[in-house]
Image (cartoon, rainbow, N blue to C red):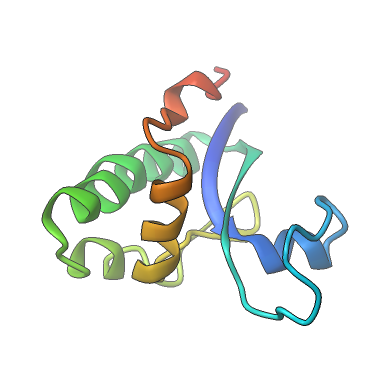
Length: 105
């Protein structure tokens, strides 16, 4: 199995005890967070498609349909982030993020 970075719900990772809460006190909103998960061959293919035709294509075009195509998809048990505002927030804070740097075959 490969180690694949995915963009998912920060609130979900927090609930699973995988990260500490970065939010201000009283903020209960979700946010996008990267996690590296073990992925099957099919999940690794899906992750690559998400980063190319979902995440990057959405940021380049503003076409939310690029993200909508991945609604309900999971990798390693975690849902792919498809909320446009949260994807944009992540991209703004993490300019130049390259998921390929975290990939481990």
